[in-house]
Amino acid sequence: MSHAEVRGPSVELIKPREECGVVGIFAPGQPVAHLAYLGLYSLQHRGQESAGLAVGNRRSVTVVKEMGLVAQALDERVLAALDGDISIGHTRYSTTGSSSWRASQPFYRDVGDLEFALAHNGNLVNTAELARQAGMLPGMIVSDTDLVAELLAQELAASPHSPGREMQEALFEVLPRLEGGFSMVAVDAGHLYAMRDPRGFWPLCLGELDSGGWVVASESPALDVIGARFLREIAPGEMVVIDDSGVASHRPFAGPAPDPALCVFEFVYFSRPDTVLLGANVHRARQNMGEALARQAPVDADMVMPVPESGIPAAEGFARASGIPYRDGLVKNRYIGRTFIAPTPEMRSRAVRMKLNPIRANIEGRRLVVVDDSIVRGTTTRAMVRMLYDSGAAEVHLRISSPPYRWPCFYGMDTGSRSELLAANLDVEAMSEFLGVRSLAFLDREGLLGSIENDGGGFCTACLDGRYPVALPEELGEEIHDRGTEVPVAVGEP
Ligand code: SF4
Image (cartoon, rainbow, N blue to C red; front, side, top):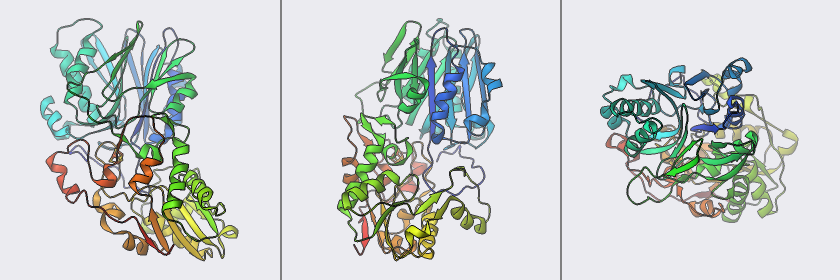
């Protein structure tokens, strides 16, 4: 985490938290605020702390943002007042910066008669250096996105005006200085901008509206919801500028392109199952992971059940490959937000029960294969296992459809620190003991990558193998001191 980190109230970290979702629309002559709202709504899973829109009307840019879910932050009264045909939107989970209105996005700046707004999915690793360049003290920085907006504003203020090109030129100056993961969208009075870092850690795709116009979004289902046709992904290291003359593609980063490194957890957990990334369907990939897991770590059992909802496709795949019947064993309360705050240990143990409740009739007397997609701290998993035994399970065998999560993410995902990651501190045998399961197995890295039917690109797997694609500054070194150690991924009786 960067020095700009200021944490909000502590929340129970059950899964790695999604970074953020972004959307952008350029639709000449059409009011776009409602369309951007729909796009954000479909990206709600990527961040539930705050939501915001910026709308450009060829003269000025207006920003509205509020804490809460998209439907809480942006109501009809707000949307009706947003007049303009260019928009960007953002739904946020904080990975740096505080969980507060001040840190919500988009960020706005005006420099003379030029106004712009910027929204960002990802995390920069060189914020200390960028803050120095911007002349900002650590206490002045709201988030890394605020820092980028400030650098752009300074660049605009320093450069002579050449109408229509100022923002593009400022982006050409600032983007190469950023290190880390970013998919960004920006709007000024007449343009929509969309850019990805050179490795393309976070997804961003481009679509076309039948009514005339263009849409960019973190995930392809946002295009479907808005009514746009998927055209292509924005390439790692590409900057797209959209205006009345159409879509122009630029390469602001000098030198040879580095190997692409899309976050592999987009396939394991983060993206919607209906998302298509690198030509691969996410739901299909998750089913393949379950099948591969069944082949790698078979088990003699009576029933395969998912930890709902994230474990469902992998459990389906495991059941199909193993021939063991698939049944539901847990019911999830869908109305508990992912940021449910449990202030005391007593409340925390009840919180698990509030989220997941066992179906005793399916569990009693059975040997269970329980399939989930990942383990972060393990406290919830342990409580869930106890609940299954309390409900009469004869055996609980846990199968995880990704490798052990052992190193923290610095590129835009909140995994907590290394000390909080179960697999960073215990080997698989000790984890199995801690969780109270009869056997425990993780899908290995090759099985994970082999399950994704991608037609190109490459993946970041740093939190699984400690190989960080973008060098980390020294102050983060402590967190990753023993990276690269290989560990076994299965233990227990088959
Ligand atoms: S470190 Fe892990 S969570 Fe972060 S970008 Fe890489 S694969 Fe994704």
